[in-house]
Length: 255
Image (cartoon, rainbow, N blue to C red; front, side, top):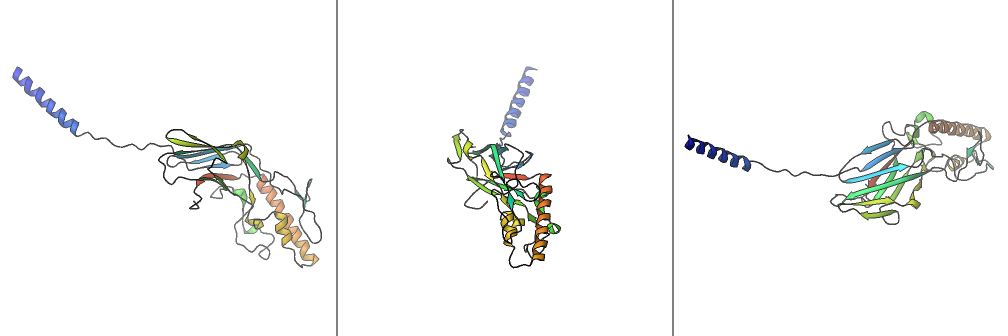
């Protein structure tokens, strides 16, 4: 009996050795990744994750004032003007028009990250079900094809802000396995731009630039159409949500 026990133990040991030789080890790739974070003007956040690059941001307020920065008097044949206290008959003036301010903007980049970005890019997300108040279809063009020659859709507002990941804009700290970029307090405020609906110009410049040698009757129609378009913009933007997309890009590749 003792002899048989020794044989059994020996067999078990042999099996154990075989078992060990069949065990392998995989490599786990670990990283926290987010290449973009969408921010809406009412602080709704849409996060998109990717490899070992992370960006996060927050706005200081959900209010963006849509107005012109300075007054424009209606003289001669100008059909649109601005006033400091416009009430219903004009466009109000605000020195902080189209401005938005971050409370924080932080970027973290891992030491082994590929396609390392060198700037933060801020745009308006006009994608599906995004910034729906910003898009203008054909029926919104009351001026007609004579005065607005580009094709629909158009957009009331635009944004193409680029913030370099440099010490001028960010506090940069080495965290060991990654680097953190924290936007400086004095670099928190940026501005939107007027969009393609106004040819990239402020509304007064766009509408008044359409005036050439038209007769009074045509100028009156143009003025009424401009009023309708601006009133519609006021209603639509005032009740809608604008989605800002904060993402990381590379200035040398345009991506």
